Length: 190
Image (cartoon, rainbow, N blue to C red):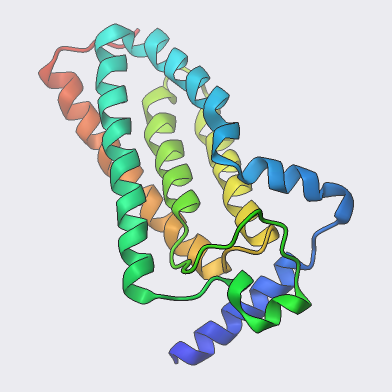
């Protein structure tokens, strides 16, 4: 059963990875870089400040710090435990496209996926009362970031799916924690 899932994941990876169009390679290489999302994070923090004021922003920064540390370490624990090679380290990559600057050793599951979806769900839930479609836009952004990992050849779809699901759960759990802290510290929403 596990071997069949790995085979399906490999076939789906090659299919999706080979959908790439050379003229769009620059975009997917660009979007996959974590630093590229920094302006978005700054805008989101500003929007949180507008909605929840200084106390709410401080709680958000604290929770985001916990989230970054947790998602990064949790993904690394899984990678080191399962030791699943990334597609870019497999022989079949010659039938695919590898565009990344580097190829880490293990890839199960995607750190980009867990962190992107955790941010989308946490911040999307915090701001949905103030900005009607923000959750949708943040989930689209998370999808683009995580799909880029398949496009450039460093993650299987299963790595992305697992990271995305765990990211949604982490983001929602931290959103609930945020609500508890908002109540405890009397944060009002405008």
